[in-house]
Length: 384
Ligand code: PLP
Image (cartoon, rainbow, N blue to C red):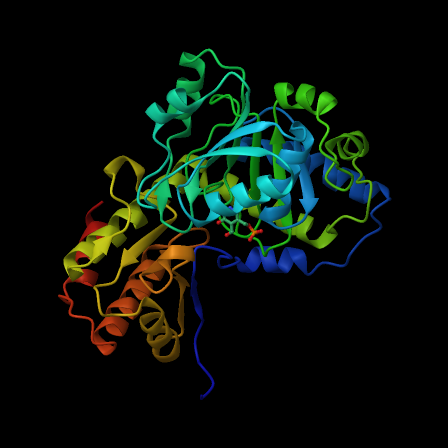
């Protein structure tokens, strides 16, 4: 294959494109992680990261992927045999369920069709007196469906139930409105490589007072993930182990960029790009996987391919011919959907380019579409 001139379009739903300013920040020389400059960096960051989570409480930062932050949320708050209520919204909800099972928790897993989010009405009905925690994936990256966390909180409150609420915001944080404190979330799980526009490598837990109290009695084995020594070291601006110094430089820069744009504008931008993408999909004559208008993800769109076509082959054509990476169908959706990531460092023209690559690729792969898709998206972009 000849050298692919021009920029690669990394339009998977994370890792996302990293802004040049963040790449430059990361390339600064590594400093002593026990020295005064590092202490100042951490102290500043641990405050600056809070607004993105919508919290005024502590945020624990791990050198980890999102999976590590999932484990941290469970092992810090729960004990062997504890009952957890979770919902089969898609691949990632299923993986989190599997992890909880492996850790020795008892999971009530509410079945789902991978085309809807958590049904808040099901929450009240499925809580039992011994439910200790409710786990929700805010934005199911495998399906492009966003669950209504505020309504889930409301359902738990209506039931007068004391369960902890643990929420995965891996593909929503910094892209979709999220409010840890206001929605009474106890642990918010996230990571660096999606809306925060960083490379993979940082995991996060935002932690409520109630979660901190639960951690005092939780008996699942924990060591590396234990919040306590980390929060203690953070008081002085340090970590109890060697931190990912250069990613923290990147985080400082990406938070600066998000603040400069303004979180509200960031969320509006994502919602607009999602609306334009759905306009393209419908004009092509294809189907968006998400079935509920209230649950369309602003971060990505999963597109069903017609029977007789293989979504992976379509993605292959689009990558080979146009240098655009799209997300694969995961789990039971393998080969049936492709996912267009429109999150992170992304603008109208990046979306126009991405959708043009998709439209040309669909035609080359022999999928019967109406080539009106890109025009429909451009109309949304130029008018809204
Ligand atoms: N949760 C969601 C919603 C995800 O999309 C992902 C990964 O894409 C994960 C958890 C797991 O995160 P990681 O792959 O960083 O471990």
